[in-house]
Amino acid sequence: LRARQLYSYRLVFLWLAKRTRLLDLSFCKGLAFDCIQCIITNCLELKELNLNSTELTEDSVKFLTHHLTPGITKLSLAGFEFINDEDILSLVSRCNQLSALDLQKTAITNDGLSMIITHLKTNLEKLDVR
Image (cartoon, rainbow, N blue to C red):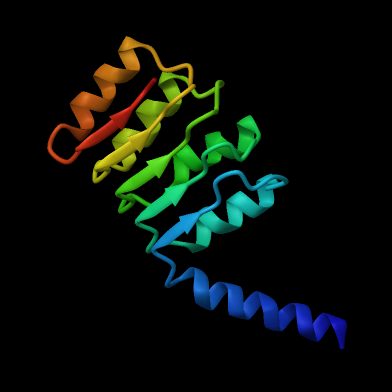
């Protein structure tokens, strides 16, 4: 019975994931790599994602910056001090529809800012890099 329940929950999650457009996980703790991988792989209609202060691992953030759906328009990765210019390049070259990007308390440099400007110049309306 338990395996059947888990299978049912998985089907419900997959059904919901395909329709999810906004996901705010800010301040959620304990999000493991496989959880982030499942979200990024299945939430293909995602338009807004807030991961502010979630304490994700570096591997989770790298996976996200390399595999996030290109249609995303608003993203918060605030508080991830290990995000660097390479991650930013991967993100903005894939996700060039971003209109709002929150990179507070990250390791972005002027080179990263130049990449953001180059790739997002037509859509970006709000950028936070404090």
